Amino acid sequence: MTLKQQTIQGVWWAGVAQGGRQACQVLITVLLAHLLSPRDFGLLGMTTVFTQFAMMVGELGMTGALIQRPAVREEHYASAFWLSVMVGVILMAIMTACSPAIARFYRTPDLQPILVAVSLSFVLQGGWVVQQAMLMRAMEFRSLAIRDIAAVCLSGIMGVAAAVLGWGVWSLVWQLLVHNAAMVWLSWSFTSWRPPWRISRQALRELSGFSAAAMGFNCVNYVSRNVDYLIIGRLLGATPLGLYTLAYKLMLLPIQNISWVIVKVLLPAFSKIQHDLESLRRNYTKVLQTVALVTLPMLGGLFVVAPEFIHVFFGPQWEGAILPFRLLACCGVAQSLTAIGGTIYQSQGRPDLQFKMGCANAALMALVILFSIRWGIVGVAAGSAIFTICWMPVSFVVASRLIQLPYVRIWRAILPAIGLTALLMMGLFAVKHTVHTSALSTLMLLGLFGITGYASLLVVMKHGRVALHV
Image (tube, rainbow, N blue to C red; front, side, top):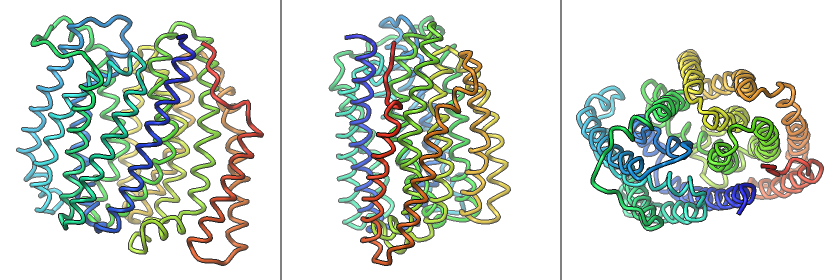
């Protein structure tokens, strides 16, 4: 099978995985939103700021290092595996020791036992990151799709069952732990490799050059994406954080289903043609155009139907998430387009440059959030949107220079999608202000109109499909 065929097949299976996973997660979130309170979601959101950062550190950047490296030996896999497990144990101990201080930081004593329980996921993650890298390196995205969907379903069933039994926030904790346990079991089921009992210092040194910079970027990128959670939880409390968390999750739907799917496949594909700059330039702009054509209309449509969507699926108790979600949708436009640039940095072996960009982004984002928090979660969402949109051209400039791509070609790829999305949104608003029916009827009508308009855009811009010439 050629690289082009592998890449297209990889995008397909990654799309199936993401679509199936997101469909299950949306259904589970809707059910849990009716069974739990915004405060329950806010409590888990407080822990997530710290626990997901620790999991980012625990991954050590090994996934990208094992994928990008031209030749990988047995000792690379074994050393990366055992190091990940040991770091997971250390992080669990640190989180357990720090849990009282974190609970005091949030002024929420209920948080301490939740942090201790969730820290078990650090060790569980160490049991599947190397197997995931092996499957991604081999472009076995079908196996990854089955694993991801099954893990979400199993953990979702556990979470909903626990919520029905009245476990409150602990239903979300058990959902997280079951998800990581399922990831371990399924990852081992899809790989025949078993780690031998040895660690090679030489192998770790060979991986560390890439993995250290990649881990550094992942950490600062996580900080820039989650500093809002930290500040909202500390200054505003659990309930506003719960509303903001829902708004942010809804904004991420198109990005996770489109941009992140493609990024997952592009790293191994671009790494194989890392020295063919012309091919990289051509494929980068084509993928960027495709992402813009798909994600921008989706985000624009969600912006318009946000009130009806939240009222119908989540209920009136979540009304406070409507305006933050609309503002964050603008933030999502920039995030969906700049996510592709990460594959350029890593495929060119420049995670150090990506790390520097991430540090600048995280520092500036923190300042923006600290300034805008005075206006509540609406102010935070507005500040995030303005900053992210302003940062987007900077990200484009750096990525384009790395592969000697004329800057104008980037905007030539995305401007048609921006214009057509604006037309679609105007049409949706016109329909919305013409009809006066129930929220459900309005949502269905706008959905039908939006899908029809979306299909029309794809026909008009049919040259924007992914067609990798490698």
